[in-house]
Length: 120
Image (cartoon, rainbow, N blue to C red; front, side, top):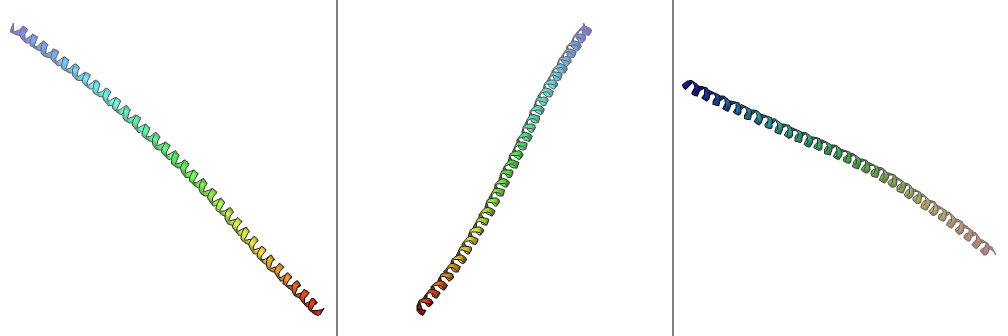
């Protein structure tokens, strides 16, 4: 009877240990599943961050190119305006010289005309 009681106690103890081991195994499986999910979320977040960084870098490169193009256009326009201003200054100078020449010719003609009148 003692032997049967000891056997029963041993069987119960083994059952309890088996149950505890099974529970520990289930807990470990659940923990591994949670770790895998957390790792997947972390990987997805990292991929999203890298994608966002790449997109931001592309946008920055595009904006830099737009700015460089604008600078090129402004430089071209500035050069054109400077050339126009130079051409206008040359035209004004030529017109002034032409006016002085015509004025001098007129004065000479007028003076000769007066001399001729004076002779008459």
